[in-house]
Amino acid sequence: MTSAERKPIITVRDVHKYFKTPRGTVHALRGVSMEVKPGEVVTVIGPSGSGKSTLLRCLNRLEAFDAGSIVVDGIPLDTAVNINKVRAEVGMVFQSFNLFPHLTALENIAMAQKVVRKRSRKDAEMVAHELLVKVGIPEKADTYPGQLSGGQQQRVAIARALAMNPKIMLFDEPTSALDPEMIKEVLDVMLALAQEGMTMVVVSHEMGFARAAANRTIFMDEGIIVEQGEPVELFANPQTDRFKLFLSKILKH
Image (cartoon, rainbow, N blue to C red; front, side):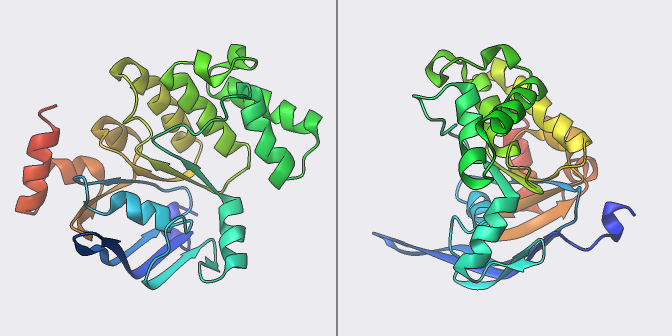
């Protein structure tokens, strides 16, 4: 069964989100609806303030939404019990690495496994070692975050999320805090995950990754989905003036 024939693993219906600010109320998401099928890789792009990161954070209820519905893996995000169930199945990687500075790379990856998945120390460390190999830095097991490059820290963060055996991975601008030479090493890990069939929703401006790995790209602006489609076709034939303007600015860099 292809991903197109499967039931969605993420369903978003008419979601609205408001933020209170000193200048008034911001309508950050304006009736967003979307679906993600199992094994699908969806990239979400758009200018700053378009709502893309807010949408991503709503998918595991790091942000509460004000109207509409979100169902993840058959579980509605409507109660605290359900939210915790969903979070156990969804890994998230942020722009900032959020590693514990007093723990080694191995310990950072092992800790949540012991607390949440109730694995023994031996089993958790075995998984951590395997994942450090997977992300290409097995030699950094006993290294503290402050001694790692930004790219290495982000790869440890990805390994930590994978250690929970998630069904879905969410990435919120995972390369935006990295120096250019470190971006590729992180994108290579993400590309490998995509090729293995991991369901992924990625907020990113990395057009190369979208072309190489994404089944679909969504362009957001002012809290709505403006255009979406297969990346190569979408970038080659933008349909709206707003998306054409966005691409003209992004592709200059």
